[in-house]
Structure formats: C-alpha cells, structure tokens
Image (cartoon, rainbow, N blue to C red; front, side):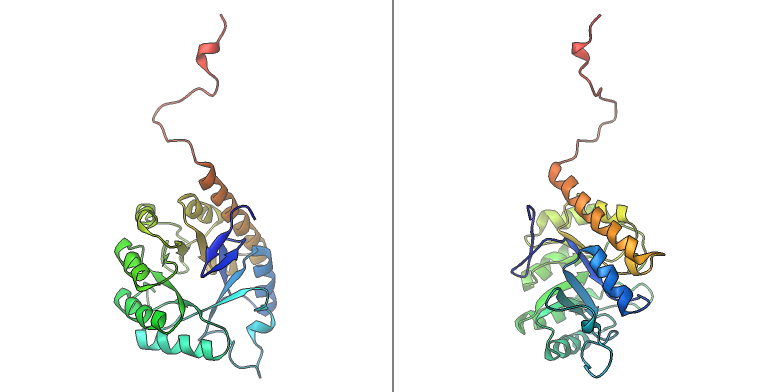
Length: 257
C-alpha cells in the first residue's frame, strides 16, 4: 500500500467507491463489487433492504466485516427527510458513515444546496461522518468543509448521465481550496472519465450507473478499478506541460553530420 487513501480516520487501498443499485440481482452486485476492488460500498437506505432481516437483505451478500458500508439518503427531497433516513440507517446498526443526498429537482437530480447544508449541520452535530453529494460549486464545498464534513463529493455531471466531467475547472478550484478529500460523485460513464477525475487530483471516485448499467457490469467494474489506479499514478507522476509546438524526443544538439 504505497499510496493509501484516508477517510474518516480509516485507511483504504482502493480509491474507487461503488454503489449497489440497478443490478439484476444481489449476486451480480456482489460480483461487480469484488471485481471493482472497492472497499467502500454505498447503499440507498430507501431503495435497498438493509433494515429488515426477515427479508432478503443486501448485507447478506455484501459483508460489512469486509466492506465499509456507506448508507445514502437517495430519494430524499428535504433536509428533514434526509435526517430521518440517516437516523433510521444508524438504528439498523449500519454505523455513523453517511452519504448525504438532498435532491432539489426530480428531472435533473441536482442537489438542493441550502437543504444539504441544513441537513449536514444537524447530522454532523448528531455524530455522523457526513459525505455530502453537492454541485461542483467551490463555495458550497467550502461551507460543507467548515461545517465539519470529512470530505466533499462534487458531481461531475447529472446522476446517471454518463457525460463525464463537464467542468474540470471548477473541480480544480475545489481541489485547490479544499483541506479534506475531494471525491467525484455522479456522471462518470467510462473508464477514461474515471481516469480524468483522478488525473485532476481528486482523491477518489464514486460511481454506480456506469458499472451497473454497462452491458457487462463485471468487466466494467474491473475497467474502472484499473482506470482509477492508472489515473492516480498519472497524477502522482506529473504530466508533461502542454505546448503549442513540437519538441523532439531526441536532443537535436547531438546530431552528427
């Protein structure tokens, strides 16, 4: 582990975080997570059963002893609803980790930033480790950091769109001013998108649809694992500067003749 990822006081090898929605069944979910190499797995509390042990439970297939389970408040449209859902997850014994989503519009699924800030304040005080899904807005990200969120998760593009990073310049500004990990969340569609996010300097990438919606989710999960790793190494290695004109690969001063 030469380049570990630290989040919430824990150390991780993988910088890829994956979701559990949209798969054909729990078995495909399990196989995709294994192929991705992810150690943090996010679960929509209101959409996937993790609270009723009398019914088929996702946690029977995704072992909480092996993975850090990150419940999320997907489907919540108010701060109160998100707070209530978070507390329900904790009461179910999943823990204090939380991906906070407060959606402001049903068509775009963009975050409601004021409601996200409101919910984050309450939940941080309530002892949750709050990882907020937010617009690629440097001001909103800074406010969430100041509230006490241990990371910020700006979107790359609308949820499930697969458009990739639409505004790398805002992501760069967020990275420049952030003192906590920056995790790109939503909008990644391909392995190259994941690599770009990591090459910008992001600490991790969170995705669901890009894997679950692929023709071969297991193969795509592996591709995303490799892309995140390659992008991180490329960032650490330091790319050459972009130039308008060519530069010879071999020194011209050493030519004979």
